[in-house]
Image (cartoon, rainbow, N blue to C red; front, side, top):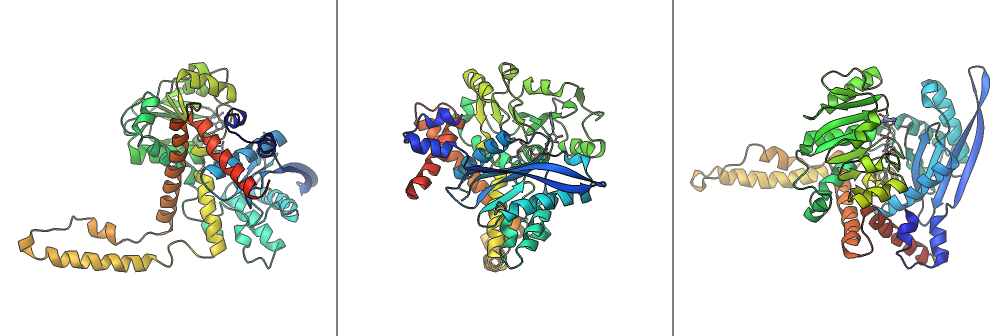
Length: 461
Ligand code: NAD
């Protein structure tokens, strides 16, 4: 996919190669004494590009972790950060482990030991390398990593900025957990603001009433499905999970399904919907929008030709293989690429990092001052509307809505919305102005690679 885009750019072969390759991958094997014996674990931290520092990218706990996977995901982070103008290079980490095999105490020992190995080599550092959660990790693991770094760097006043995705009480930011799903919602909202783009996907109208199938009701899929159904009027007609799928043409209750999965470990047995045992079959079901939000490679050479959705938004990383991408493009399917679609997470991580470095919550200085100024306007309007001759009245909820100054969550959402709109517009400008670009993914790569190349040139490379 990179090669297809870079061939359309006039970069020197040397610079092209410099951007393509992964700068460094560190492999560590470490032992932890568990259940009376030493167990050895293998972990990676890969740095794809240091055209900007720190470099950024999640740490994944999964049995599928390998050097190849970590390097590919690190490269994707480089392009993702460039596209949404988060000032970071690309990195990724992984630990080969099935987290379900260990209890919380054991996982803490393992995570802290992995963090120790990475901190020791500056592969976790507020100004050099800042990890975040990914598959199999979350707030809890990030809090352990932040604490491990602080213990090893007791005088670093910026220690909390060494990792993002932390809990609020440990230096996190409001809205980080929902950020990637929220970003998927904002991406679709922006897509539907552009009639020509909607028409390119053989759709019309707004998000309201669109029939959506989501694969994976985890962090990303759940939030995307919840916001799209509750706030945009879309219908979630299908949910695909690891143990099968649910189908209801009238729309599923996302909250109820989420609750069921939390209690039963999967969708099996959920009442009030048709259960499909071979869940992956639902990826081929008729719908308006398909949201793969679980694993990589789920749309591949085997099923791509049968996928009917005219619009796919890649909430997961790499859900469509390169071969499937070609088949889908030839069928006229529009794909909103992962590098853009799931960039909400890194965008809000960027806000968290800035918050940690500035040591103050967003909105703390200006919120009450803003409310005071709004109060002046409301008082004046109330004084005027008291004059019956003018026949003015204030609408019932105007006062409440207008008086409220923005808190951190609102500011984070506003910053994320702005980022997703601007990045989409930069992609579509390339998509619609260059004859040799016929899809959003190539457009996204072009925007990103040009930014990375400009950074390297500015450094004199
Ligand atoms: P998660 O672990 O919270 O959720 C994954 C969900 O997929 C789970 O509900 C799981 O049961 C389900 N699943 C597993 N195997 C499945 C299968 N074979 N078929 C259908 N469903 C299956 O993970 P997440 O954080 O939501 O991440 C999902 C994807 O989004 C990953 O590709 C990840 O790299 C990407 N992503 C996540 C973030 C983030 O902020 N969490 C940011 C960017 C990209």
